[in-house]
Length: 119
Length: 137
Image 1 (cartoon, chains in turn brown, blue):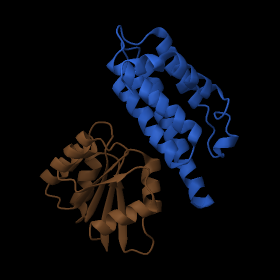
Image 2 (cartoon, one colour):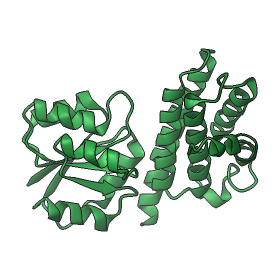
Image 3 (cartoon, one colour):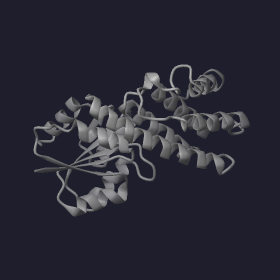
Image 4 (cartoon, one colour):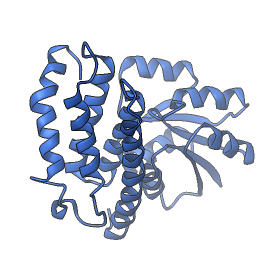
C-alpha cells in the first residue's frame, strides 16, 4: 500500500483531496494541517508521496518541503497551488518539489500526478 | 460530485468559515494600527480556496475580493488603511458569520443581492480601482 500525505491548512481542501483519490488504487491517505503535523506524519511511517499546499500560515508548502527533506523524508513532493508564477515554480523546484498540482484539484489531475510519480 | 460528498464538503466548509471569520474578527478587534493584514489576508485567501472547493461561487468571489483588498492594504496605500477600510472589512466579516451553512449557495441569504455582496461591491467600486491604478492585484 502506498502512503500519501496531504498537507493543507484548510479542512475543506483536505476532505476534497481525499474524496478525489482514485478508488481503485492501493493508497492510504493521511493528512496534516501544518509543519509540525507533517513532520510527525512522515516520522510515523514511510511515506511515498506528499502533497503540500503552497499558501499556508506560519510555514509555506515550500518551507515544509525543505523541512521534510532536512528530516530525511525521501517522498516524492508535489505542490498544491493556484499560483503558477515562475518565481513560485522556481522556488519549489529548488526545494526538491518534483511537480505542481494546480488547484482546483480534480480526480483527473490527482490521478495523473500519482501516475507521473510512479504510484 | 455526489450530493453526499457535496453535503460533507459544505459541512466542513461551514465549520472552517466560522473558525476563520472568528479569527479575522479577532484580528480586527485587536485594534492594532495597522491590523495584522498578513493574517487577515491568509484567512480570506484560504476561505476563497475553500469556497471554490465546495462550488460556492458567491463566497468564492467575495473572499477573493476581500483577500485582494487585505493584500493591497498591506502593501499600501499611503497612510495605511482608513477607518472606512476597516469598517468595510469588519462589516464583511460580520455578514459572513451569518452564513448558516448546509444549504445550496443559490438559496443562501449571503448570495446574490445579500449584504456581504453589497460590501464586496462597494470595495470593488470604491477601493479596488485605487489598487488597480497602482498595478496591484
